[in-house]
Image (tube, rainbow, N blue to C red; front, side, top):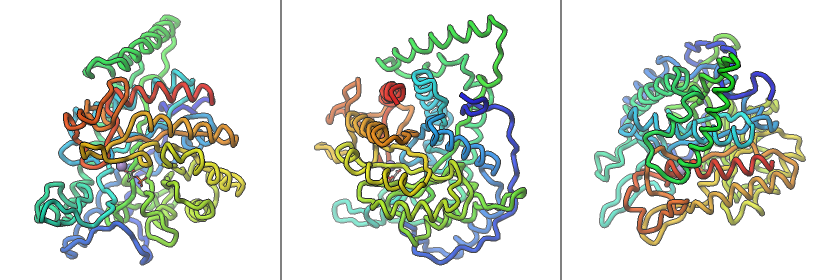
Amino acid sequence: MRPGSGSRTGAAYPVRVTTTSAPLTWPELPAKQQPTWPDTDALAQVSATLGTLPPLVFAGECDVLRQRMADAANGEAFVLMGGDCAETFAAATADNIRDRIKTLLQMSVVLTYGASMPVVKVGRIAGQFAKPRSKDTETRGETTLPAYRGDLVNDFDFSPVARIPDPQRLLRAYHTSSATLNLVRAFTQGGFADLRFVHEWNRGFIANSANARYEKLAKDIDKAMRFMDACGVDFEELRRVDVWAGHEALVLDYERPLTRIDSRTGLPYATSGHFVWVGERTRDIGGAHLDFVSRVTNPVGIKVGPTADPAEVIEMARLVDPDGLPGRLTLITRMGAQQVREALPPIVRAVTDAGIDVTWVCDPMHGNTFESSSGFKTRRFDDIVEEVRGFFEVHQALGTIPGGLHVELTGNDVTECLGGAMHVEDRDLELRYETLCDPRLNHQQSLELAFVVAEMLTQR
Ligand code: PEP
Ligand code: MN
């Protein structure tokens, strides 16, 4: 590992305070999945306020993450993205945030230890409040109401008032993200993420086989740490980690006012999160979402599903990253376990042949969602593993780099995805099905997945 290439914090990097509101004018382009705000005056006021608030993340941090993503593209690091499908205001509690961070830290220790590979940790956190929906409305019985579009837009409660898009929610999302980030920064920079606490991260979770396996690994790490301590080694690097914030840049009335010009370079940055991506449903060429991420300087992602045409993927890449900046573009492929081996190779081959350099990340969640016989939206743990396996195989065969994993997870003991060592079954889903959108891996399933992926990484 090159010095400084790890995802643990090395030398301090400059915090450039980007306080100027971007004097950017945004072109009028078609934008899918946007709320229809009934009160446009209120929206204008909120936009103006958002434009004056401090940035949630800083340009210098985004640049460091871009370098980390470039390391992953080169096979010198591995990206772990994870968190809720849809964050909610109510669930932004200290315990929930801590447990999600602990889960990410544990997974990342498993991956780092198993594969001797620095792990770049990106939460789906502090901004993942908006959801694209397949239908604009939801019908229950005789009643049809506007669909829930995430806490950024309206309320999940099935009542006419709750479902009205309310621009005040943009401000609430900003403040909730700010409080979340504050806690994430405290946990990761303030000693909680110190590798000497590798056992602590396992406390509080219910005992299970993945926990037990983790405990064994933590003991090995402990021993190594004590050895280094005895030798007088005191790596500052082991005390802190970087956990970056990422989310889908979906609602442009939130993202645009939070764009700022970096005072040092004069370049625009999305300051709603370090990493923003465009979803499978909004990645139209000529659409407002790709245009948005093409204008900001952050590392950005595009989700790519099984129906994507390789030529279209090349066009998107050229549009978003015309200069081929290392680490700038991540393609998050989400093909489905059954399709990954057929659908992924033509895309990877076309991108490689075009000389385009991207970070390849596997989202094994969104191509594997189905409705269980008990009526819950769910995913099978085995399908998730199978898609990751296919992703690794395809890249291995083509000589390209499988650079990371993007999953929906929670630190809580939910029953939303089927299978895993605990054998969550269809009839168990109702026990603790808490997500307001897509099913997440619970703590144990997340750790189990990390162990499986660590093995794949050692064979990479
Ligand atoms: C998501 O990440 O929650 C999502 C909606 O994914 P996709 O855009 O890949 O469907
Ligand atoms: Mn989702």
